[in-house]
Length: 349
Ligand code: NAD
Ligand code: UDP
Image 1 (cartoon, rainbow, N blue to C red):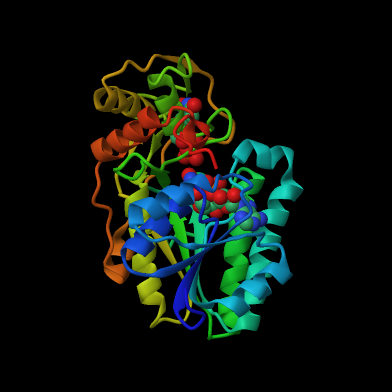
Image 2 (image 1 turned 90 degrees about the vertical axis):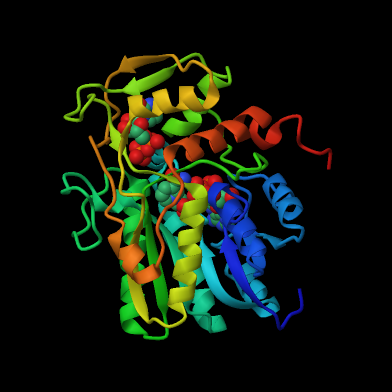
């Protein structure tokens, strides 16, 4: 990449959502720089992205908390936008190690913003989460609702960053910031070459079901069947990871002619229960997904789905892939890579 060419910086670009973002950007003709400390990712994801795209992103192994590393990166590349995915995301771990989460997610983002301002880069897209709405919101959840009280330090770190970025945009009109509140990202690229590769036992429903279907785990634990929902199990708004990253492209384009901080939900507007997901996965995979009902998981809410109207009106974006696509793509990835990136498909270098 020539030093004058404008590029998009993707922090956390080796991770699950980031790697799909990098592929979509490369396919759309953008020059891409990835910054990742590989805390929860393998560089193998980026090797595969480069093969799929026929062109590679620049890769900087480094940390968003490292100001020197950021200054050197901004000095080397002409960055037009920062898509900021880097962060820690395991809810249970955040309860056990809150300071690690606040340092990575809050201090890390603060340091990134300081380096951006010094470099004169003011367009930022932040990976937020529907968790900032907290409990007890009327459905569907729209962006005009006040944020709530997240039930764990991970969620609090997302809300703290949102508040910090709102203050920053109010203080200096050069900033143009998108706060994208994700609902439940699932699925994988249709090639089956890149996907979600959780460390150890998956916390999230779809990776867990996929590991049961492929025979890595015996049965799914369904966390509660006594919620006030049609079948008693929790209901969520699952969104295909490729729809999600296309929402980022739309936000990037709108930021060019916008100032301030804007909030957009990225969801489909449809909710599915845990048992809906089990049934749909069995259909997509042709494999049984045995499950047993267990007590509710602490901090879980009964149901949650997005009102995606604002993103449609202001970004011209809406999710287009349905549940069958999400689960067929998850299954293709899982089947081809039963051990994730660490499996036998990993080249020996
Ligand atoms: P991921 O863990 O796969 O990706 C995050 C990436 O950031 C990893 O590659 C990791 O190595 C890197 N990273 C972590 N700390 C870093 C640091 N200090 N410096 C540099 N790199 C660092 O997670 P993901 O599912 O791709 O999520 C991406 C973003 O979206 C995260 O901010 C997450 O909180 C947010 N989000 C995810 C979900 C979800 O369900 N996956 C839902 C809502 C929001
Ligand atoms: N869930 C479950 N078993 C699992 C993981 C999740 O029954 O092993 C349920 C969980 O209670 C919730 C839904 O599946 O109702 C989605 O959970 P996930 O952790 O994927 O997303 P989040 O809770 O963050 O929305």
